[in-house]
Length: 325
Image (tube, rainbow, N blue to C red; front, side):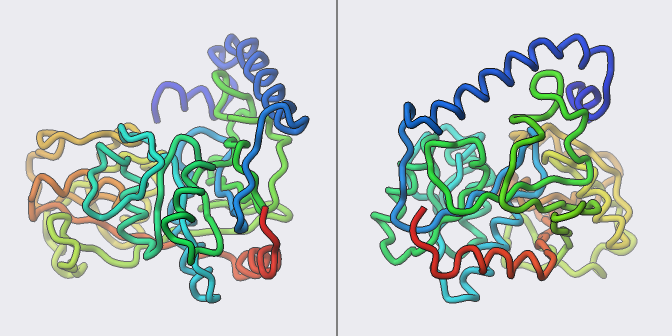
């Protein structure tokens, strides 16, 4: 847990001292939203329904696995989704398509992972509405858009908002910089999904479960758990909540020495040099950044979202036959 998180997820002297700045940030957030509601800041309506997946807090809560699940669920119901994301961590501001041949330094790690796994068009752009228009121009067959981490991007109108939390909840319930919130805790969404924790009334549960492993240097080469028995394992994670990944390895029966890195960290080869180590385990988000090292001792763990069946029915009931945003 980094310095900020140590104070964001409890009331401390630091968070109390920062509370006045939090009030200022809240005022600016409220003003911005009011300007959009009044029509003084222009919104863009796409010609297809838009689902926003986001969170009120800073940091990873499991949005990207949920977006992958949504894309698969929509395809299963004969829809043709496209995915938008910011491309955080990449130097490209877009709008542009993301393909498996791109690099994470260009498009960001999450966007590249989505492009490799989602089996549908993925576009990035600082302006999500412009990226959506570009996606639909290039892929007119798409009939629904899923936006990864766009809850605060009010310029893009939306039909359905999904807020994702994890077991940490909303922390001390203060806004930045005193707490982890981007918007007030009172901000309403259409559905709340709780990853790894117990959902409250009206919320839905989600679990991320390992569904396989493969060599980072060659994703087509599967790795069986039996290959790891008796090996000296280390694990790295540069995600919003590294402990979630390490706990999943333990649930799989794997004992590894854990190493946490900042979210979206750009690995160097020397970061993965550990004494007494045979295999380094990592998330898929880390794997797209480490493939260039060409090392066979790096193994990625694929995870898939498992959701409450009632959540899928809610999504479909809100989207089926829905007019554009």
